Length: 149
Image 1 (cartoon, rainbow, N blue to C red):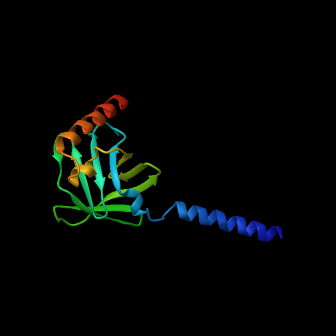
Image 2: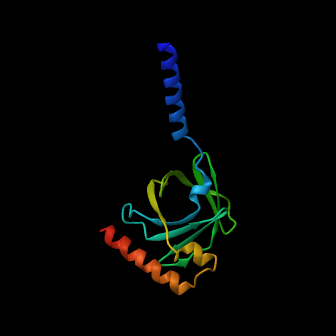
Image 3: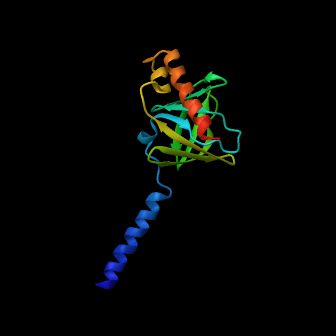
């Protein structure tokens, strides 16, 4: 009886480990609006990303709305294609509630889920005007700048 209990406990533990490591990220949990949470080594600018079921949209304070890129997820990594180029690996992705971590090219980016009504997703989908999005974006940018100091 003790051996059987031990075996069941060991099996459950191994199942738990394999489900945490190497499990494909649920794409549905990626959908929505995200903002850079960390400054990394000082080379990261504030950026907001909107992810829908097939494309990623980027809004950078210096550039504005960048061209969208197609993406897919495979083996715990995210790949994207900008301007119909070949797909490139961005990095490994990890999702923990409302924080998305992307590790690649020697950098780790943390993105925090954005909620609210004045988001990049609503702007991209033409549900709000640019000036409304821009005002909200600047408020989030200023908050990020203060928190990152």
